Image (cartoon, helix red, strand yellow):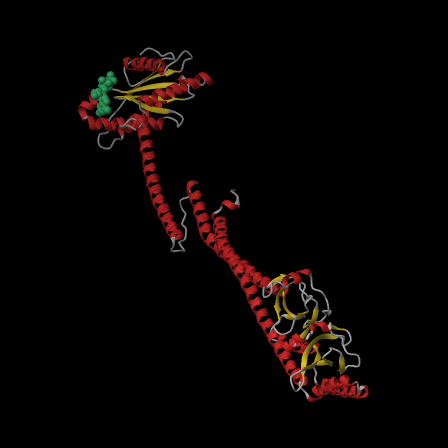
Length: 555
Ligand SMILES: Nc1nc2c(ncn2[C@@H]2O[C@H](COP(=O)(O)OP(=O)(O)OP(=O)(O)O)[C@@H](O)[C@H]2O)c(=O)[nH]1
């Protein structure tokens, strides 16, 4: 049996699977690559929109607070208080100064209490000395050297956002100049804003995206984050610090909010903070993996379907082929009574039809050949019979007689079983012929042959030696028994010829007999002795039997 791999069915299945798998896998890989790029692109776009949104919110928040503090810087209590203090400093009225400071502090406290975003309000005089504050111990602001006269006249100074331990929140201070009614710089007002309040806005913005938003200070430390569990002032990994320089570029990194993230850094316009937006990369990968698994499932199902179809196709080809092979084997073994039912109209059906036609033709030819064979056999048998038979009498002919004598001689030498040869001649047959004609002569010869055959046993042989001469071989018979048989022949023949319907005739026979001798080597030896015996019978007056092997009395 050949390996299964070489069968037509296996080849069809292997081809079908390869033909399905190669293009599907190729297209799948291509589409994965494109999908991956599309997903990353789409996530980056979403993060950019989110960062834009946060930036806008931050600007709005800053604008609102700027308006409020600007309004405060031009409020009467602040301007008048600073004007009074300036004059009192000049005139050194200490009590009045303290009273004015106290009034101003009360005013600032009242204002701060009304503003949710403001943690603390502090007023400085033109020498950058604190004169009033809403806080009992005002925040120590950055070195006053930074807010020089020139810088204040430009509008405002923003102090870098930082974590304020006292208020336990991310704070952001802004300083605005205070001008007198005649536009002289008489001091400044500093507002410390609560960035923590902005977290609610971040959370609102985050509703529209699955990304997390984190605000970083200028040292890349966390000020505020929409994600829970992020410590303030946590320092992101050094990768962030590098990324700070690559603003607006999406990066994949060890995230702050997620183990692996796609993130975007964005510099805020009005507030000196960096906006970091991040999205969980594993979630993106999970959706990609889900897509990949769907694709693999699809490919697996496709391969199963293709394999089943290929198996069915292979089966539909191989099964009829196997039937044909088995039928052809049957024909080779000689069974022509085979018919295969034609169930299909395709090439296999055509092949089956042709096969049936071929077996029909073979059957017909076989029948013809068998008939011819039989006729030939009959002819052969006839020829064989004719070759050993005398045409007129149907007795054995001379050639067969010769063969029988050879066999009998051999047998005699082998078993020492004596046999006798009788040479029989119709007396005066020429005269009969002449008188009655050859046709009647033939009938008489046939009658003599028939009577001869009746007179001997089935184990004996009778032959026509030629003309009116016949031979009889009596097996396992000695001379005396042969003489008796010869006499019986004579009387049988005589009786038969006398009883002929058209020409009853008196027929006599002369018979010469010899027994087998041990020195006989050829049939001729026996025939010669039988001939001598016949001659002697004729000589002694015909119508008698003479045996050379027994003593006869003289006639
Ligand atoms: N009708 C017929 N006659 C045959 C046939 N064969 C030989 N004969 C004739 O048989 C005769 C034989 O005669 P012979 O053998 O000469 O002698 P006979 O007349 O029998 O005389 P004896 O034998 O001496 O008594 C011949 O006339 C042959 O022509 C045959 O097949 N048919």
